Length: 341
Ligand code: NAD
Image (cartoon, rainbow, N blue to C red; front, side, top):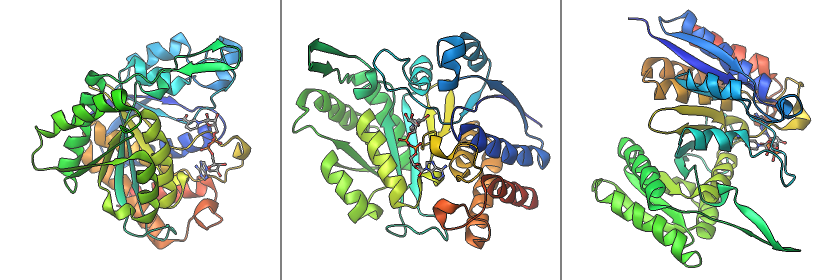
């Protein structure tokens, strides 16, 4: 029986519109070859909205998101001046309590990687930590930022990571800096140990963030699922993406109990705007994760297989992975494979 989903599409800034359209093109190919129906609802969000709406996440967009089953989000430029609107992605994550940011990093065929055979997932707490956005100047030239860690949010993300580890190689590593951040990482670590009791088949170990950053380069193949707090997870997932090839390949899911938002790990790369040269695979793989989240496993596997085949053949490759193909050529090659599978 055919199923219809309402999908919010936020194209974002910089290269966002190009990579988002490339992913929608592949989703159209899935629709053309199955009875799955996706109703794309386009919304405005990002830096380009601020001048017109006074915010990067207009009310109309919030209302639109609430009417949808999931969101495909392009990267957005985040202003860095104090007092500027908080990142739209951070707002959406908090609004829908999307507590788990799931970022798979693995090597791909024909893509040069620092180490072959890497296949790991970083699960990052997504709603608090150093990204709480609470910082203020206590005196001229002296400021504090609050790193909020709660047992509730830590348990939610730990539970999500354990469930993922159970479906994979049953190995979970929690990354922290409890030798320095004793209270906050103490709460996080206790939550992971508590969640571990529900998953006795998963092997658990832990490592300090500085050592984890080193091991990700030296022996990334030793990791399966990594769970960590917000800032540590953001940094090491970018690092892991580069270890496995390119930021242009890394996708991320933001998952809560009732909603999911899917996006590339990379940002809006403003210098490449409109050049039709960046890699759309990260956003295409974000769309793949979205279908998986919606329970459309066959369609999700189709996209994954199409990406793998295009990369294996090596005929169509964007510049970041050693080729000269354009964003739209890469998208079209993957869409054609989807139709052929
Ligand atoms: P970035 O990820 O946008 O770009 C860094 C570099 O990575 C680029 O110069 C490019 O060489 C490479 N790259 C990124 N995406 C690529 C792709 N699809 N294909 C090939 N190469 C690619 O990081 P940045 O320059 O630090 O950030 C730019 C803006 O994006 C900032 O405003 C930042 O706040 C924002 N940002 C947004 C998100 C998000 O919306 N989730 C995430 C990260 C950064």
